[in-house]
Image 1 (cartoon, rainbow, N blue to C red):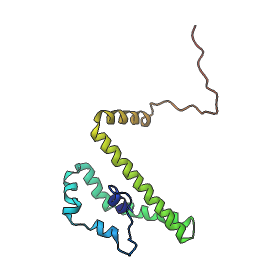
Image 2 (image 1 turned 90 degrees about the vertical axis):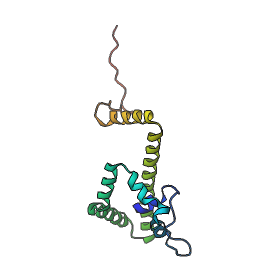
Image 3 (image 1 turned 180 degrees about the vertical axis):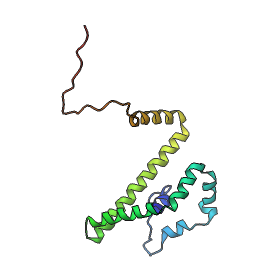
Image 4 (image 1 turned 60 degrees about the vertical axis):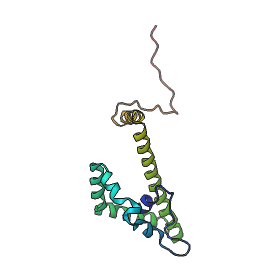
Length: 147
């Protein structure tokens, strides 16, 4: 699933199998380095991110977690067409997450000042210093004004 997302993230979600039965995903994944720029990408990756990705590639818990999610999705309905559709929705969700992250990273790289602002706002909401939202069903209680 992740391979489909990564292989598709610059072109749009690809069809894995062509109408003539050709395995397009394997062909794309197995491109020679001059076409895929695989070695260049690993060489230019930030070391912390590259290391974390290498660990994730060999993480049995990640694989079993995906299998568990797919099993749970398939238990929702016994119809194989519905199961495949639901797993396809998961792929689209993962693809959307990757695209969102890639675009956010690109914007942050292009505009560091805006990235700092966005990051600062995010931290306000994660460190507990933000105000709680007022429940729209309850009337707003305002302190009495001082005279």
